[in-house]
Image: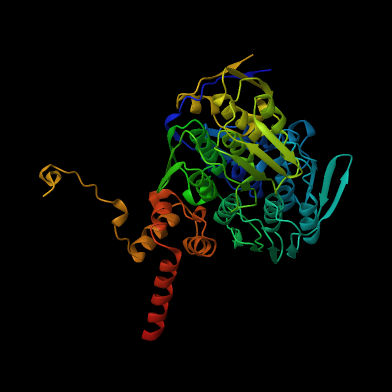
Length: 418
Length: 89
């Protein structure tokens, strides 16, 4: 299995990089493409393993998918004739649960194995089931397979007990072709939900209110062709912003939506990092001794849980002690033990981590425990003395396009080894 | 007098000082959305309600342009224009 070898030394990152399309939007938009039998064209897709896995699943289901370029996919789902994706493919990514909403929306039935993805603690799909049931579907989980059947989907009022991006999108996918009006209350407000709604609306769906906590969907009988470009990835942008700040570098990020990274900009500025925002670009100029800050993760527009592990690495270099409170996923401190092996001084109590600053990290063999933790170890490796070797890098490639070449173009020294 | 004024000095003009008119912004954004196959009214309403620029395509720099004005300024222009039309009719 391949590993990443990272030469440390805290060399400042310098240069310009372009941000790729948003993984979390793309993994919902691709399944959404099967809601129509008309031609679909999706641009600005990130070149990541999760996307490759989804395309494989669609092809298994009978969809004709063709890459026009590394980031542009055309989909013809007129030949779709199966609704049972296999476990071997589905286990590769959490987002395969979007196939449930899309297949039910198209066929009125789906049989999808309980999905895989990162182990971030309990991530129940009960809100997805609640929504689909409210729309008139019969849902059963048997032998690890979620079986959904609906003779007819009928619009309903659905109140989500917890704010869930996955449930919000899955209900949207099922409801676009339901009869009548669906209202999702306490909906998630993430930009990726807006992008999925944009995609569906361009196909002829009637979705209003995406990006707010009440989404209204009026069902339509048919959806048409669409050509859509995926929004930039705010988590990838945040990752490189933190990497630039941690190495006291000077990096310009292109193709970002600044509004989506407001919480990251705010925290970095609080730490004394210079962040210049202009149009669709952001420049980050790090400082040698950033100030300690406290961070609490929350659903959008709060500080994203996906950047918690990366922020933790940055805070090991801060002047003073910081506190991170993880409010979204209770099992999301698995990276702490690995960071401690690199010399970080971190204490975890429940959902809170206390990080002592001014730590000299030292290179060590570490295992990428999940996608974002893997990226955090890459940044930690760049800060450490000596060499760091990261194993289980498949997690990293699931969500970051060309992470090694992007960071190396900024002056990092990262090599893939066997 | 301080001698520094005898030297050549370079002044940089702030690009943010450019004045954007709501009407022009709406015009460019409307055309860009239409050209890309979106329903311009739905997308603009979505942006005004949620504040999320993801509603606006990046085509023809429309996403950047709409952020040049605050949402309340855009809404004032829309409501003002609508009420003016009502007065006339």
